[in-house]
Image 1: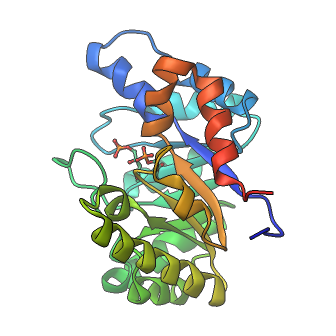
Image 2: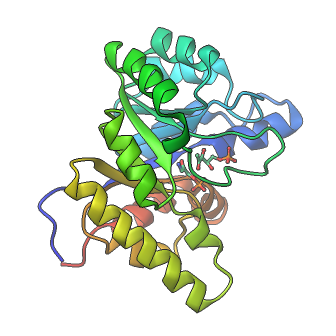
Length: 245
Ligand SMILES: CC(=O)[C@@H](O)[C@H](O)COP(=O)(O)O
Ligand SMILES: NCC(=O)COP(=O)(O)O
């Protein structure tokens, strides 16, 4: 289906920082990755400043804010520390994500429905600072309704359960949930983005869902970059998210 808006690729560069932090070296430099990704067609750069600082560091966010030509999507937990950082640095976008210290990676969506009042105030503060807020949620009607109710303008549908599905039947179930969530999100007026665990093999059915505006993809792009170079990895993914002509 030919959509009337461009589909945007957010390249998540956390995984470049992971490699650096693992050894405490000066390389690889996430900033360099961001600039190469932008030059190769990334529409935005996504970074997750985790509370435990396991990959992206405060200095990365600060430097990126100075040099990015596109825009920064800062993923963060809904804590007061992160709100202060975001309002000081002023990324164009913030995506609020749940965080657990021991998790290997983000395991699920934010429970907006159970934390409406807190998140409404939290998002309002960012909104007042001119930051566009998105909520990282599971493909779940209750969460979409809650996101809309608290005034979020965007959501990012967590595609990790789809990516992790062990067999075809489970994948189909997860895909249907995402399709339904995207349609509902668009209907109630939200900008709908998607991300987590998307790769060169599983992106096609997700990219084919009408209504998804931005795809935030990191791990698979940085992994492919090891063998084909970052610019080529970004260009290849950018092609895959577009509708076939
Ligand atoms: C929220 C999300 O999906 C991203 O932040 C991404 O997964 C980053 O990688 P880590 O989960 O390894 O921090
Ligand atoms: N919000 C999802 C994201 O930024 C990238 O996730 P992943 O591709 O690294 O799993």
